[in-house]
Length: 183
Image 1 (tube, rainbow, N blue to C red):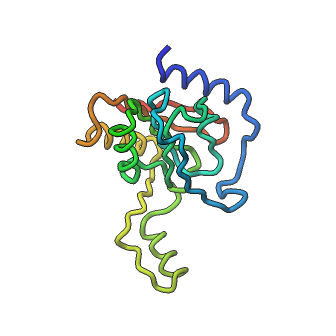
Image 2 (image 1 turned 60 degrees about the horizontal axis):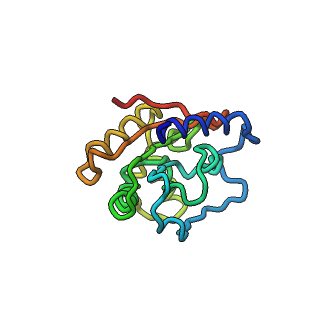
């Protein structure tokens, strides 16, 4: 069984035993955790990187059938590859990962605004602060965005053509991973 097939089997088991279905978009404890753990320094046994949104409703290890030390899990708002490139290159070049999973999800907050909206909120809430130089990488179409982010990696000079790259949409209501054809 291939690594990707193992992930599909693990996700099917997760969907059948998933304890929570409908969680709200904001994290319940209103906390964001940025962590660096010793397990990331070791070569992962599966040689896999998982790029996923920071959404608090998603437990990547459970949804993908991963154990501690199995994979590098890189999370950011929207699970966007341009923002994660630095971490992906380090994981692949220095730590030997061979597969990248790009997993974005339904009901993502990044679908609900445009850059001009967040720029206005920042300007108002931070008393005139200017963030117009920052692209917050929102997107209007989830499936197309997964395709675009997979293509970004496949065509980037810092990601070797030998790296296996897959795109998925994670359904937050069911926990199911839906492959996105990006060929």
